[in-house]
Image (cartoon, rainbow, N blue to C red; front, side, top):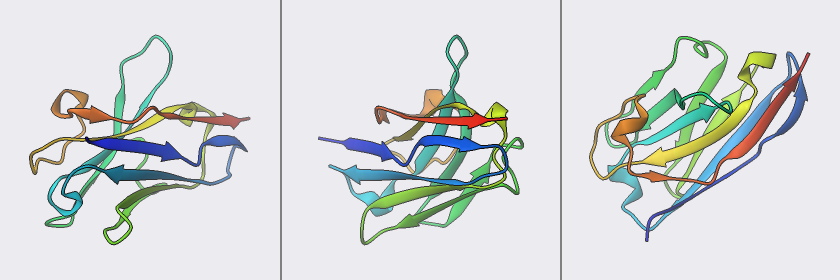
Length: 124
């Protein structure tokens, strides 16, 4: 059974940093991409970043480029999202997701499996 569990969310002041973690199990971790998404109530999920571990492809949304960094630890089956210079508009529930195909993208429609999400709140 594919499982994704996010952690690391919390409350931080603008300009601060958080590191989100995504623990993966139930699939061949090295072969499939992991994406990070975020969602504000009443809005669609927004793709933030994805990493394809098999060929080291990484993508970021324009809104987070230069501030967020995605990385993976294949031995631990973990993917991280380091978020620096946080802004109030980064406030959202953050999800990690995966799919059973090596296609790294920022559209939520690509992804089959989702974690439960972790809340990030950035105060001004």
